[in-house]
Length: 331
Image 1 (cartoon, rainbow, N blue to C red):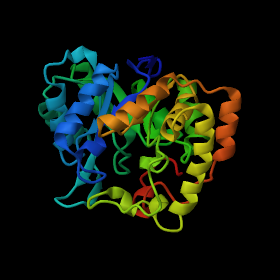
Image 2: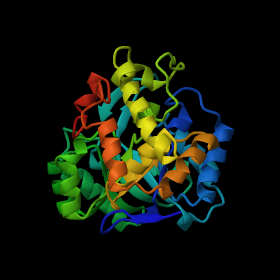
Image 3: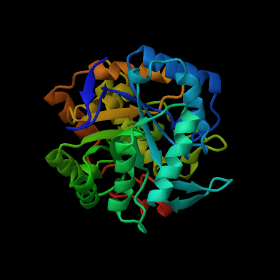
């Protein structure tokens, strides 16, 4: 497994990371035993970066990872944890709480659920408009100084917020959606990260499965699958977006790879400071994703990909309207 370093101050991690959200029901029912086996397979393949959040099924995901990681050398993997999203007993979200006292409270719960004395990268999931980012970062810095956190991360914030946070404590990486369908990060955020020496961990590299090569227009989302509310998956949009996938498939076939591998490799090819996260919840999907790390895309290949899926070609926002206001950048 190749490695990349997240920014000037961040950890060295595998060139492909594992996002664990889908293992806890975000995309419909998931098999716990298979999820644990997938984490094991990822670690055995050399994947060292594992991403989660305390609100993924309200702690379920952290407890699952604790089970999957039990007995492993703590220095053999890097845990990235998001915090702050408020949930209710049902599917509803209740905003974001990034108050300093909340930061420490959320961290205490995560450390207990994960069964560890520290997380490697700790990051607010979204910006809390009621709390200056300097106060949130100051609380994380205290936890870094105390040894409970190793690195500061951010998630889904704009260039101005990145600069303000970085002035308080060096930011290791920004986690943000980046894929062939979602390229808003390229305008201001990515240049700012590179100016400041901050890495990028890219989630949604397969558009939540839309550009995996496995989605079909007549596919119905399972109960509990959050994609049923995704604007890019609704009738009228999904057919258009899958047309882009078919154009991408022709490029992949000429390259001798799958659509998913090509989409992941494209993100990785945008810079050595970028680490794609794949949300595989089965060993089969993980096995398909892993070869993308070794897939070399030439300038001609990249040009072919751009012709198949030009910037801004996707139809529909990346989140439902209610969630778009909390994002640092749009589509």
